[in-house]
Length: 432
Image (tube, rainbow, N blue to C red; front, top):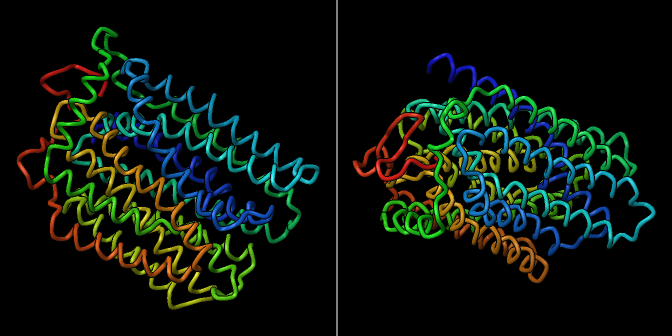
């Protein structure tokens, strides 16, 4: 990498470290789950957390792909969007929790869930644009390593945030501690976003005339071109199966808080949850570099194996050590779905508009992310946790076999061009 790319990588590492710390203070799989249970949420509501997170982080992406078209002004507009939408939602959730003792529990839990939905919807609008922006700043030959390092820093600080949240819940059992966690997350996330203003984006020095907004028909044409490619379809099928088989992450906290899982206290579950971000951190660091060397399909396979191991722990073990191991392996699975999945998306684009390719891939994946956790929550309430875990294990095994037999690594196929950070296609000079 040249000096500019190294500087930008340093900015992303610093920014994502602070963002990871902020998000861990209010982590959906631990802190939010425990807070909702504190105010009377049942398994269906807990199951909806993953559905909201998965569905709303992907469904609005077409909006962002259409709105954030200026390469010249993309950095500033993306960062101001974060500051004006996501930060107020975090602060608002803190206010709600601060006044929760004076409110009916049903209002608190639904207000908190709606705030979470608003936050994830705001993230969903911008996520494809953010990934495309980050990809445009680094050469393809080192992109996996950079993205892995950035996500390692984010998840590493997330581990610190998870431990801090667990410690606070243990030593300050009053429910107002949840409010202060949200206030701290809002403040830390604000500092994180300010760090990104230091990124030097070469596109900011481009003439505005080089930006062209695609019509909806152009987007749809590129969606069809992406989905027409057989290996990309097989990749999406494998990811849909894997995602459906891992729709139970919020129910992990419910299991280990139950007698069958060891009846662990909420502070112990949240502290063990720090192993989730540790697993994400280490897998991102290793899988990003390994993917640059041997292909990112390998990371997808490793993630599928890890999720089968998590489900085996949930079926056959209990206690604090089991809880920590399950969250760590879940982190490996999540890390694979971040760095390996993202790089597979970037490398499988067969046409001239990478942003639309990322968007259609994520839109397809939103279907199981939205529906599977809701179904898992209803099934857990009706039949118990064990049958749900067993069913997910079967689906996860099917995902692993599909990926092994039908998905090829794109860098070994002539269809996919491996180019540098500009990656402008021949047909259009568009916002990519």
